[in-house]
Image (cartoon, rainbow, N blue to C red; front, side, top):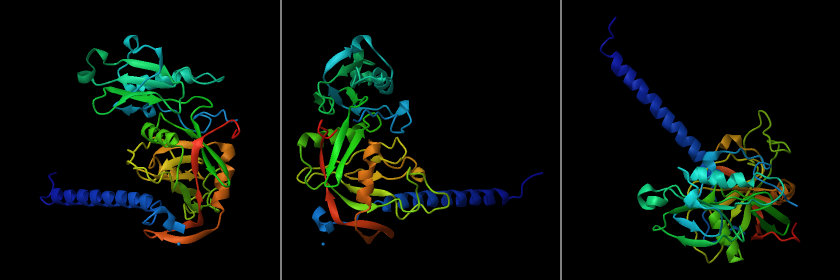
Length: 335
């Protein structure tokens, strides 16, 4: 039986209506995620106030080979443990995973903590596929040979057990953070530059929201409870006064778990999650995780006195007195 002449037009209209509804729904979800973390516009930051042998797997992150990434147009130097002229792969992920595989032991640092790969057939020529696995003298201050558009190499870091841990020092205690360079190489690259500056004037927490009655002690969402407010997080900035911050590309590779440290947008605003925010999926770039035993410091900050505010129609809790941060290395005394 043939269709009536207007059946095709009716179907087309129905399809367009469904497509439009889908686009509107996606836009609404994105807007909600964005405004939930959007701070008010301040003329300056000050205006806001008128043993640790842990690796990524132990912190609850799922291993994902596609999340093994590096920074393009960067060549790291260092002592070679695998010579690229005799060690080749087709992708940078394979090179990254080869370095990571040398960290599988449970009794000490990685044999490889950095890798360099040449992946552009045209620019690399006979060097295409070369994967150099290296060992740095100081994994938190890697030796850079060269960087810039003319560099044909992609380089990355990997931190094994007890490595890549930095500290956010506050008046309420030390938050030790395990950096995750495989899943957020550009983010970690910025943080290592900040670490080298040896100061973080202007870095601070300015927003604090507890778990309330919405999440349990382990960060699991309580059935039928709202998803916020409060949003179970503490938020701040990692932009040092006097330095020029460059937006960090999206590196949304991991879900937001309790202890996750992630950028708000492209930074330098960041947050530490006090709960497992499964509803946020991979909307934010996670670049580190607070060591479990230090989460009590984050919880303590979340309980400090706050005042109510509204950011883009979202109710938030802002600290009455921002908490200054000092970003630095971990010393034996800190452990």
